[in-house]
Image (cartoon, rainbow, N blue to C red):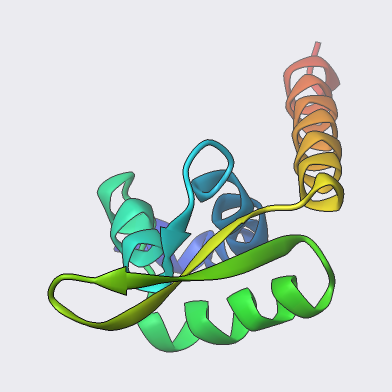
Amino acid sequence: MTEDLEFASLRRGLLELLALASVEHKARYAAEIVTALREVGYPVQEGTVYPLLNKLRRAGLVDHEWRESSSGPPRKYLSLTAEGRQRLTEFREYWQKLTNMIERIGR
Protein backbone atom coordinates (compact mmCIF):
# COMPACT_ATOMS: atom_id res chain seq x y z
CA MET A 1 0.00 0.00 0.00
CA THR A 2 2.88 2.38 0.72
CA GLU A 3 4.04 1.92 -2.86
CA ASP A 4 0.66 3.14 -4.10
CA LEU A 5 0.99 6.36 -2.09
CA GLU A 6 4.59 6.94 -3.12
CA PHE A 7 3.75 6.81 -6.83
CA ALA A 8 0.34 8.51 -6.75
CA SER A 9 1.55 11.72 -8.41
CA LEU A 10 3.29 9.74 -11.16
CA ARG A 11 0.10 7.75 -11.79
CA ARG A 12 -1.97 10.95 -12.00
CA GLY A 13 0.45 12.27 -14.59
CA LEU A 14 0.05 9.15 -16.70
CA LEU A 15 -3.74 9.23 -16.89
CA GLU A 16 -3.87 11.39 -20.03
CA LEU A 17 -1.38 9.12 -21.80
CA LEU A 18 -3.29 6.00 -20.82
CA ALA A 19 -6.63 7.49 -21.84
CA LEU A 20 -5.25 8.34 -25.27
CA ALA A 21 -3.68 4.89 -25.62
CA SER A 22 -6.98 3.24 -24.67
CA VAL A 23 -8.65 4.62 -27.81
CA GLU A 24 -5.67 4.28 -30.13
CA HIS A 25 -6.87 1.17 -31.97
CA LYS A 26 -10.54 1.02 -31.04
CA ALA A 27 -13.20 3.65 -30.37
CA ARG A 28 -14.57 3.27 -26.84
CA TYR A 29 -17.13 4.98 -24.68
CA ALA A 30 -16.13 6.35 -21.27
CA ALA A 31 -17.15 3.32 -19.19
CA GLU A 32 -15.13 1.05 -21.52
CA ILE A 33 -12.11 3.31 -21.04
CA VAL A 34 -12.47 3.06 -17.27
CA THR A 35 -12.75 -0.73 -17.55
CA ALA A 36 -9.68 -0.91 -19.81
CA LEU A 37 -7.66 1.17 -17.34
CA ARG A 38 -8.71 -1.04 -14.44
CA GLU A 39 -7.96 -4.22 -16.40
CA VAL A 40 -4.32 -3.17 -16.80
CA GLY A 41 -4.09 -2.36 -13.09
CA TYR A 42 -4.52 1.42 -13.19
CA PRO A 43 -6.64 2.48 -10.19
CA VAL A 44 -9.10 5.03 -11.52
CA GLN A 45 -12.39 6.59 -10.52
CA GLU A 46 -15.04 7.37 -13.12
CA GLY A 47 -15.30 10.89 -11.70
CA THR A 48 -11.69 11.48 -12.72
CA VAL A 49 -11.98 10.11 -16.25
CA TYR A 50 -15.07 11.95 -17.49
CA PRO A 51 -13.62 15.48 -17.00
CA LEU A 52 -10.33 14.35 -18.55
CA LEU A 53 -12.09 12.98 -21.64
CA ASN A 54 -13.91 16.31 -22.06
CA LYS A 55 -10.59 18.14 -21.74
CA LEU A 56 -9.02 15.87 -24.39
CA ARG A 57 -11.97 16.49 -26.70
CA ARG A 58 -11.77 20.28 -26.26
CA ALA A 59 -8.02 20.08 -26.96
CA GLY A 60 -8.74 18.28 -30.24
CA LEU A 61 -6.93 15.09 -29.18
CA VAL A 62 -10.01 12.87 -29.33
CA ASP A 63 -13.17 13.04 -31.37
CA HIS A 64 -16.51 11.46 -30.61
CA GLU A 65 -19.40 9.86 -32.40
CA TRP A 66 -22.76 8.91 -30.97
CA ARG A 67 -23.75 5.27 -31.45
CA GLU A 68 -26.95 3.50 -30.56
CA SER A 69 -26.74 1.02 -27.71
CA SER A 70 -28.74 -2.18 -27.37
CA SER A 71 -28.72 -1.76 -23.59
CA GLY A 72 -29.77 1.85 -23.09
CA PRO A 73 -29.33 5.32 -24.48
CA PRO A 74 -26.86 6.16 -27.25
CA ARG A 75 -23.20 6.24 -26.20
CA LYS A 76 -20.45 8.70 -27.07
CA TYR A 77 -17.58 6.70 -28.57
CA LEU A 78 -14.18 8.38 -28.51
CA SER A 79 -11.30 7.91 -30.93
CA LEU A 80 -7.97 9.60 -31.53
CA THR A 81 -7.64 12.51 -33.90
CA ALA A 82 -4.46 13.03 -35.93
CA GLU A 83 -3.34 15.49 -33.25
CA GLY A 84 -4.11 12.89 -30.57
CA ARG A 85 -1.98 10.31 -32.38
CA GLN A 86 0.85 12.82 -32.54
CA ARG A 87 0.56 13.57 -28.82
CA LEU A 88 0.56 9.85 -27.99
CA THR A 89 3.69 9.38 -30.12
CA GLU A 90 5.36 12.30 -28.33
CA PHE A 91 4.38 10.86 -24.92
CA ARG A 92 5.85 7.49 -25.85
CA GLU A 93 9.09 9.04 -27.10
CA TYR A 94 9.41 11.09 -23.91
CA TRP A 95 8.66 8.06 -21.75
CA GLN A 96 11.41 6.13 -23.55
CA LYS A 97 13.86 8.98 -22.88
CA LEU A 98 12.94 8.93 -19.19
CA THR A 99 13.36 5.16 -19.05
CA ASN A 100 16.79 5.46 -20.68
CA MET A 101 17.83 8.15 -18.20
CA ILE A 102 16.77 5.99 -15.26
CA GLU A 103 18.72 3.04 -16.67
CA ARG A 104 21.87 5.10 -17.36
CA ILE A 105 22.04 7.47 -14.39
CA GLY A 106 23.57 5.05 -11.92
CA ARG A 107 26.15 3.52 -14.23
